[in-house]
Amino acid sequence: MTKPKQAIPIYKRVKQHILERIASGVWGPDEQIPTESELVEMFQASRMTINRAMRELTDEGFLSRTAGVGTFVADRRTHAHPLEIRNVAEDVRARGNRYHAVVAELTQVTADEQLAAQFGVLPGFKLFRSVLVHYENDIAIQLEDRYVNPVIAPDYLRNDFGETTPEEYLMDVAPLQSAEHVLRAVMPNSLSHRLLSVPTVEPCLLIVRRTWSSGIVASYAEICHPGSRYELSARFIPENRRGAVAQLKIVDGIGPRKNPTNR
Image (cartoon, rainbow, N blue to C red; front, top):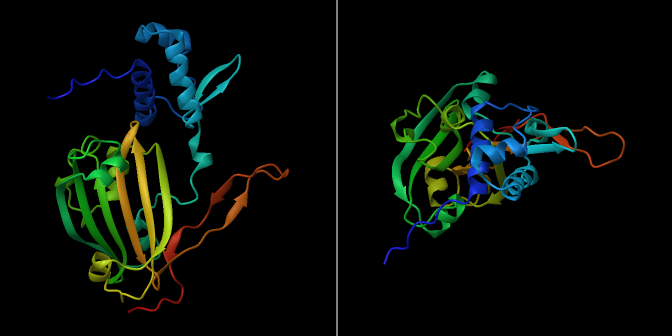
């Protein structure tokens, strides 16, 4: 027997309302949003419910609250994760080199339990998948295996990703709210070995990236770089020079090794 769908709690609807306006640019960084009293009237909800939504969004970093002044959209740009969201095509061309991509797969898949957990959906949910190899001067430098939520990007499969990178397309149709990165050194699996043409004994740099837009997970990607062709380099600048906890800002990002061993 199919269980009836549960109604979305009002506090979650309030959060979604606020996140959608931040994502669309209606409310920009440091802009004041409606008061709790105005939101109470708008949603016909209790002050406790509205307060919960505002408190959670503040804890998650989307809002900042100043007692006696109001609630504002947080400027998340100054608290960016040390791994920036970068467009590999632009990076390659900025170095004066040739860029092209080969699409190995572009299809719809069914989420298993592991993928469903990443997206916060039930197993069996339909996702889009793209597998691309990015090249610099005809050398494979990156394998991108990405899953995309069709709710966020319903036309994803209709794109020519030989011309436009998935990152560029998603940044256009699904404005980034936040991103989560995990960085690992791994040995190449069969897919990486085949598409990147790397020896099975050569370690790879793997970036696991999950992004959010409009309050939901937009994409989950595993981005693999051959260890001999890419490195992660950064220069960090402490913004707080008084000895307190310093925020760190990345200046440089992922790029090719200065003395690559092309295999």
